[in-house]
Image (cartoon, rainbow, N blue to C red; front, top):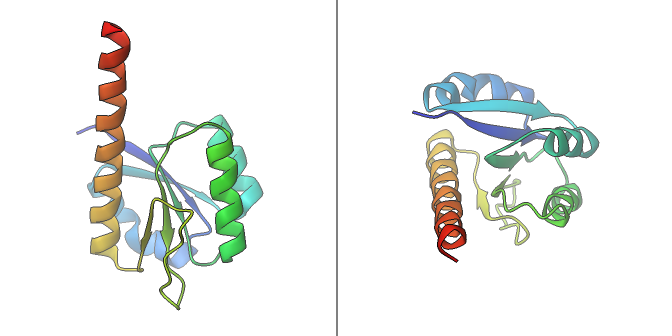
Length: 128
């Protein structure tokens, strides 16, 4: 099983500690960032399979971070943890309630989808 690297921006430190063992056993390495600035720095200097944006960020900060990621040309999936209202964040690839099993399942689906997308592009590039 290959490890997947997740940038966890604005994810509560308690949540990170609680889920870290589960995520690690599922093949994820989680890199935390406590601010938009720190998240962008990590994103620009790292190679991430998924970005997880926690509910400790305001909707505006979540959207700003997502726009900066997309402006870089990246197609890395962005998952937003729903705030207390449970509203969908339209700028993210997915909005998920703070439920460990559903979060882990959806993270896996998005990473797999992006991997298949890149594989298809590679094949098209080779044969073009």
